[in-house]
Length: 79
Image (cartoon, rainbow, N blue to C red; front, side):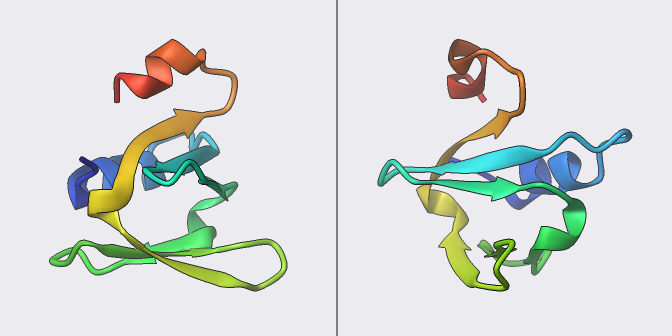
């Protein structure tokens, strides 16, 4: 289960590394820059903006892992 704290660490990492939210339904939502995601620090919902200005509201309980670019799949699954 994803937490707000884990998402916050990924967003504010220095240097920032693009990542994807991997969802329980098999979809993956890319976050190429911190400006593409927003959340309420006291909530459990995030909004991910895509490069075409579409928005996806995500319940973080449905996020199974974060996938960082260039990281092997077995490492991503362990997050």
